[in-house]
Length: 265
Length: 269
Ligand SMILES: Nc1ncnc2c1ncn2[C@@H]1O[C@H](COP(=O)(O)OP(=O)(O)O)[C@@H](O)[C@H]1O
Ligand SMILES: [Mg+2]
Image 1 (cartoon, each protein chain N blue to C red):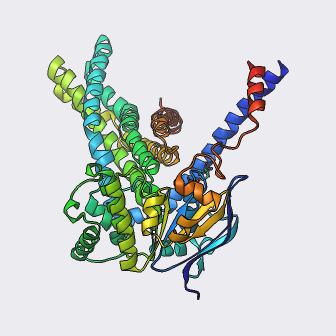
Image 2 (cartoon, rainbow over the protein chains, first blue to last red):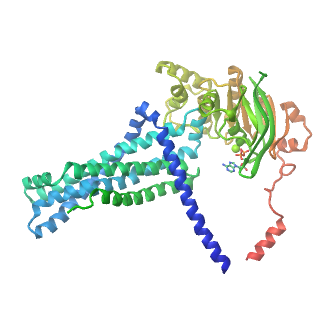
Image 3 (cartoon, helix red, strand yellow):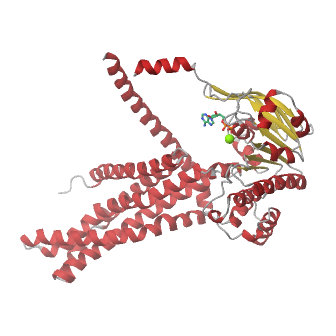
């Protein structure tokens, strides 16, 4: 009995130490990636190629989701606002929710499951099939050549994807409320224009998406590079990328929001 | 400066507390094909990784071209590696780029040659392994033997002085197998390099190599020319060359006594 208690306490301790250890390994890896990023900027073509894979190929899912989210926002917003006779404010509601929250967060979540998982799987498989070792033996540093370009591609793509998500969302809201329901076109846009502040709303949203971009891609490249070189190892790492990045996005969103919008009257 | 391009002295290595190699000595000179044989898990791959500087020994050293590998700085090591090639077990081709780009990879990374020259070099290397016509294929479109020939072309792209092959014959049909074997021999002679072939395939490798080392229990258990190996009466060599199940190389992985293991199992259940 006593033995069992000791064993379970030990197990908890082990898991805790393991997690902290892994966090340390991940941080060190992140610093390496930053230090070895010179190649990515000297040979920017490498990054552009990866932007195509992580950014451009995520575009469809981002645009379509943005459209639907905007349409739903428009519908729900109209439903509620019309009760108070202020349905012309629906444009403001749609734009603010998208630019401040849903754009960066939803785009980052979609990006994590579309591009983050792909990055992890690709790097993990390259490791499992010895491609990274082969590259190292050819005197080419895999972190500089494979990891860093993917990392920067993700970091660069994320704000643009979030922006496009918001644009599509606003368009979706417009479509539902103005075109289908018949809210006044002029007041939809003018109220939106008055209420949305460039510095306060848009820049803060962009800052958020930059943080999310760094977080998601850093997690994705680390999980791939750290994956055990087996089939289960790579599939487990892919799952962990999606789960961890989603949690980190939502947690980080709370922290950033409380710094940015605290004291909104 | 000795004749030996590669000199391995008292080399020891362990993973954690588990010793893998202890006191390995080898010497190799240019133009030679060297075979390293030994059972699975005897540390052959580890030996190649030590030579390539991927891991550091716990004792002794590997000297390549009069430089002690594990004393080199990272930049110096990478410089040395430009003169080394490594052929991984299944080729380890980059699967996202074509055969041509695979072979061109090192040339493009390490030189500033114009693309027309890169093209000529790549086609020459592919010609040497008989796959010039396959330059536009993707790695997924190649058979196992072809993939390894491409990997061979890739590893000799910059005319290295040393190429290491990790089990290049595994999983090949007899024809591809002797194609690869003969290629290794021909390229070694033509480029005047050293080839270190890690292999289980005794019969094939005895045809092409100049010298054989047998690795067992972390030491060189036997060595000699193919002729000496064939005629050897040493029990270990005999077991290996004739593929006998039990002998000096035990069939069983080290374990505590069988009875104790079983008794323990009864106790738990
Ligand atoms: N990264 C590692 N960590 C711990 N042990 C390892 C590692 N790689 C290999 N080993 C162990 O070292 C021994 C030698 O491995 P290796 O050199 O790959 O053998 P082989 O002769 O089959 O190529 C094996 O028993 C293996 O279990
Ligand atoms: Mg091996």
